[in-house]
Image (cartoon, rainbow, N blue to C red; front, side, top):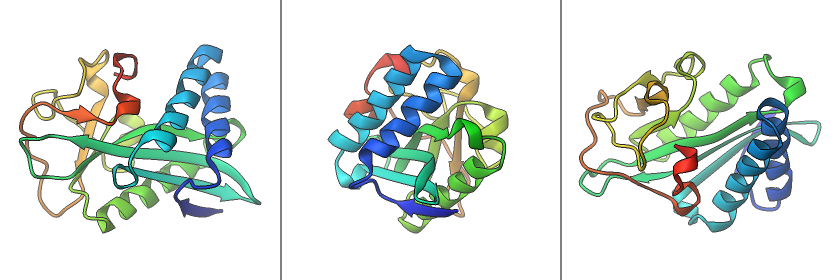
Length: 179
């Protein structure tokens, strides 16, 4: 297995991974929604506001994660939010997602990102260093339907402290359905 950074020339394979994985776990409507999210993130987000990482084996993409910029205009720290994440259905439970997340977080550290945030299963994301936070610690772009899933981690040697002010996400995530 190898980890790759970027999406150029592989967009359709990445979109297909997200669509198939979410369709299998959450149904066709969710699969279509998340596939379109991946398409919109890769097709409409400025390069400096997006990180895409994939896990590949024998030429096939078996895992994918996307980080996009989350801006706090009153705070000078660089923040990226993780969404979406997928591992091929037949490859889940083998540690691929955890390895891919560790790879992506290390790359963000190397790129000077201060904080990574995600919105998901606290038990899963705790394995790669995410800790629960409240909306008082970091305001989400929209009200959270499941605030217990709001998680973050510092990617520097400084502890995570409250992010100042409201946040703004990239256009592809700028829809309350994702929050």
